Length: 542
Image (cartoon, rainbow, N blue to C red; front, side, top):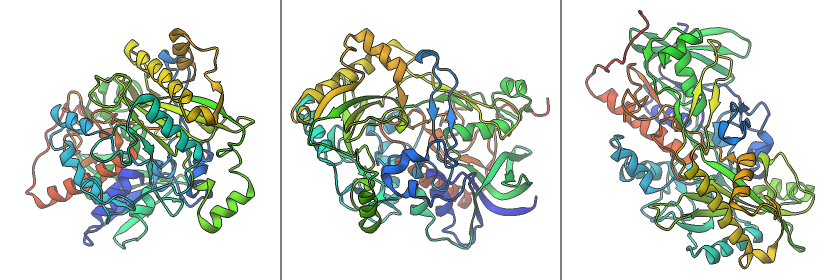
């Protein structure tokens, strides 16, 4: 091996930035953070409104699913950030932690130490909230959390209409005592600029933290049941091995983390053999249980006198943002929204509603010729599970991804109810005073059967893939509650793939929390006497 570090962190996204920065706080430890992409210092990253302009560029892994059988065989575009900050440099910056019930359910089902009370201190430790100072929030952490200063009046009207139509409260803090209700979202920005995990954790470079960009990790190097390093390729195609004296930590995301495990011989043995990879540890759950939040967009023309973000690309708005960091380019598009229940008997919200004073459809790739607004419904309590599997032994080839979204009748019923709920909001005061004709799904789509058909033909997702290397037993999971990969010593995972089930909300804050927790697990194990990690069906010698 050509170089040697104490810790190697693979992936400079939300979890990876957090764990690398925290581990490097011990100046005696040499930490290497490896990122397949490059810098995030781009206008389309820094200007919040421009996030969709990153899609299908070199900043994007540009994933597409396999044909989705429950969605008329459609392939679903799935962008993933390929740069420092990962998806925190590409997302809509909404800061939501999920619901208390999510974490308490994790703990009740075997993820010991992951209850809401267990994880709350890590959320607050990571956070620097500009507006809220109470027991639920931090004021001294690395991640800046704020509110958009110039919220559009269309967004405000939709919030008021939702409160009136759905009889839910206006909620100033979805991360506080209750998630229910509607209001303005908190965002990961600072002074009108995106504040990604890179800005939060990597601004102050320590000499013991090395960051390598434009470097693809091909596989984890295993030696007698232990992770001892990684094999990488640089942008020129040069292959080298880098040694980790203590641990390798994967934070490559819900697609690339399970793919990297499989390329390293860790995963479902029969599948690995079928694609030409010699299995070393038979771990069937690697790549299984993938979850995502299905999302539908109801769009409306705006009435005369309302313009929303329609003219945001005019030069005067760019000038305003460049000089003052104010105005329309500081919008994250989904400025407001909330969390609601289609059935009052549910234990927690099952939908997140997002209000945007703009036409946003097909990942922002489509435009409308007059000012418009969007009411999007994100199904935050889905049941269906998908899969991530490598196609071949070539580590440069993207794995297959299948969401299997809306595979059950009950899920579709809830989605239809959510569309009906969104229409109630659009018809209520004061929304009906700012919204005009319905664009999608359109007034001709009225029956529940027609709404379901429209959903299958148009549903997308909320950019939250999770759970593909989840906490669980060796039979149904990939890592233990300390995020150690079953059957392999010195190997952990610190990204959204470890969630046992997807949370009710946006996943960026939770991924950062997971990175913070992983660093503490590593430090605790370093201080403890050595132990032997149990092995799981080692098959490499067969």
